[in-house]
Image 1 (cartoon, rainbow, N blue to C red):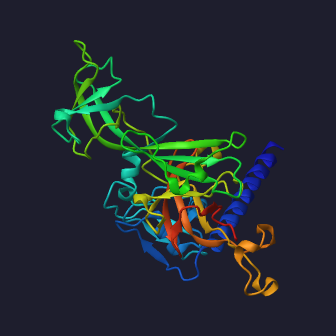
Image 2 (image 1 turned 180 degrees about the horizontal axis):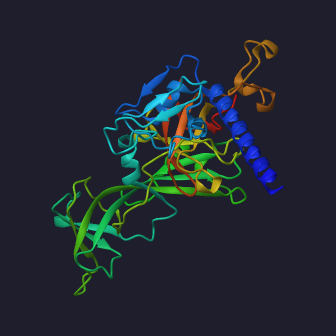
Length: 390
């Protein structure tokens, strides 16, 4: 009896394994492009996104499909020289080849996002940080080899290294926006780290007490670094910091923090969002280099972060919000836009622009790299699930 049960158990396990393999084969067949080659040898400079886009209809699903291959110890890690086979029952198979490099290929070129991994950070506040209060010879700017004077390092020890950071942008979210202004906003800082008032959008910055404004984060840019040579001694009210690293010029108002090894991912594995956000919550906050629009391989700031379930590798589709227009057939060709109430206008569909993958996540916002696009990505565009049909 025990032998029969053992054989039955083995048969069941075999049946389940075959069923799972069949499902995996079906899933792969559904995801493969019809014009794929039989084999492909991974080349130096390839990215997982580009290879997946060449073979699969949805590049962000490649881990789910490639994990069906039992011969791969880790389907996430693929190296130059590996051979990708797609000939057997439309299944994707990877065979280790004559690997020429020790490092696996990434989803994106690391060099394109490295400055945002190393030189930028987002914090909740920075007013408490020590700051540069003066420069050598009362200069306007200071660079490597010169000293700056820092207030707020009363206990600084000679030989301690500090990074110099500059506040650049403050991102906010209007919790109960009316018709007057956008839900999301950003303000730039002046040389002292105070918000500069843009009178062109003055009323958009006026927040009534019953609405409230949430700060998504303050972006700080690394300027350079230096070493403390003297603390606050002998009645001196500022510590001396010798700049010893190539970087940008330091100015009064820059903040100072201890040099620390910021933890960030070096490998990114594309995947759909784990949590569905409400329409309008996930938006494009900014485009790199202070531009208002960008394209493939441009970095953009997003209005969602870890608290919304976003992590590194999350892929969103990017959409231009559909316009609200006057039905001129119904209202007449000469009808002016401002003479028709908003609720009486026709809402047009959102328009697809491209895909973005998150590579650096903070609590309430994140940075992403535009992976592909059919039109420019602009500030204010919506972010949706990559499979969203509209």
